[in-house]
Amino acid sequence: MMLKSISRAAIAVTAMLSLAAGAARAAGDDVFTVTTDVPFEDAAQAVHDAIINKGYKVDYHGYVGDMLKRTAEDVGAERPLYKDAEFFTFCSAVLSRKAMEADVGDIAYCPYVVFVYEDASTPGTVTIGHRKLPSGEVRDEVNKTLDEIVTTASEGF
Image (cartoon, rainbow, N blue to C red; front, side, top):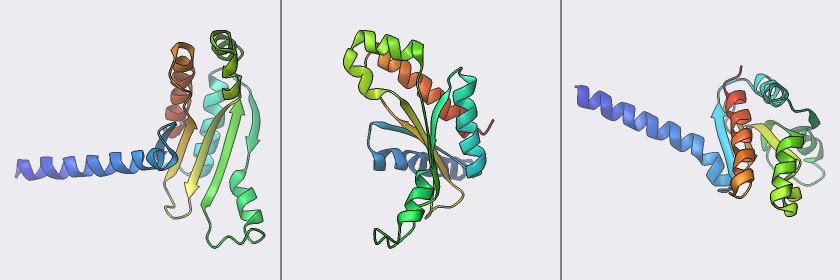
């Protein structure tokens, strides 16, 4: 009986990990994502708050989901993609300077972007993530900071 319980638990954990990792695989290995059952509006607010609580200022809050809904008919869309989707951009004077001092080409990664969306085909599951910078000393520090923002936001404060 205990072996059956362990097997069921292992299957459940494997299924949850596959679901959580699925979005990242679909987007590419250069994307870090987490999924949550926090309502979309709360998750989007949590992303904003997680950025602010790290001491950064949100430079731009984009509503890509609204744009896609608004233009769907114009581009011949046949199905909705997102129930909702937004992104937040920001920079860190400290991290950005360190990254660009290490390699001036790292300007390509600024501003940093954190996105949040609810897939129209899986309502109730919200994905939060960011594009990962290529590995490297300072870039690893930026990725760690972005990972922390995403993870904190996924917990819904």
